Length: 538
Image (cartoon, rainbow, N blue to C red; front, side):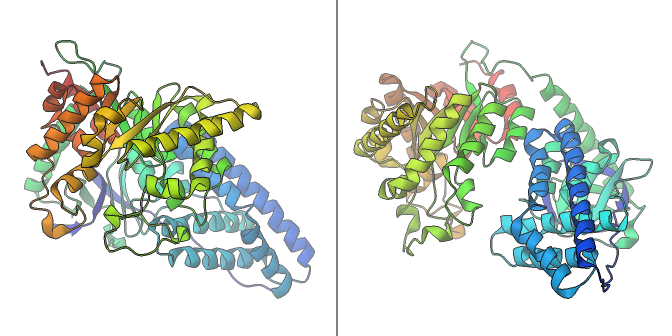
């Protein structure tokens, strides 16, 4: 038996034979051509065929993994039409008088290397996308088909890396797990693994001679067992049976109310970080989205995302949620979330510095762009807006004045928008202590327990040396939560929790007894917490 350690993308157990997936890449030869115009026509025909293939893949992916996750194939089609990418290929064909395959492969290598060298993990993951579209083009030009045949029996797929088009083309009934040498938790393949609810490991030193060997993927411990001993195999089979039984029991809760034995109803929502995460919200039957971290739009961009790009993102989420509430937190950067193009100065204590709503009120044009996009998108669903890092009534009144100004602008242009609830995050002791006053200004509170714990205990939650005394169960933190709930209710505000503590099932009953109205958690926690809520009697 051999044991290898990797990084787990999804908890779970998979047992089966390993299938070493080979991309079937071919070496591309550089050939001199005489008629560059004819070669350009050949390239253009191949590009159109590749786009047509991607459109077929998109339709297949929509059925299997949902519209949000299928969007990657629309992105790939757009990348094939990207001016910089196309210009590079055309330039190489014309100036070097070479075959289209060589021009495409060279451009793909150059662009992939450029993405791979970036510091941002998201953009590093885009190197795989560039390679994928380039390989597709080369395959079309050379008359090869993109593969996906896994054989006759279900297998654990092992590969250096996997492009999203490769995973979608695979027969899902024959796919037990993914194990890759490369990749990241931000990659599309990782997202698809989570969506398809199959275990996946990355960062494993894979070997080609594993092909056909029996293996176990332990997504709980991040381990891969090659030819496991009988004792290990028996233990993992038992764990797999327990997982299946637990899942089947939880599935019975789909569509059930989030209500205690004595009739108290709770709004059980989910937290998301991007448009792509909506599939998980729907798959886990959350009643809404309690925290949409909008900063991903800024963190993934090279420059300030414009109003139209933001509008499309918010509109997509609102439409996909089909009338269920979507609470969007406005831009929350600073502290540990830095964006280069904001050109912010270094701070000795950024967690307590220039961040979140402070940036938005200091740079109102950025804030107004986001608010216009949100208000426009509210015409397509049930959007609420939530403002982070509030410490005063004056801040809230400034925000409300800006929102009214934007509404008047939209009215003047006859642009539709919906009825939007406005709320604030309670994540500072200051906000807790004046929550009775703040409740008179807004529609709801959402308690951000991560920062509230940090500021209440004066402990930097990024400092690993302090992990042993960072206590989210501290009586002071729990009293802060109780005070917020009481003051909110006294003045007509509903109150939720969107921080990590919301998913702490040792506190679920405590929160319900405190009078909490809403819990917003990671999608995978929705059904387990629903099960717990339905067993509680207050």
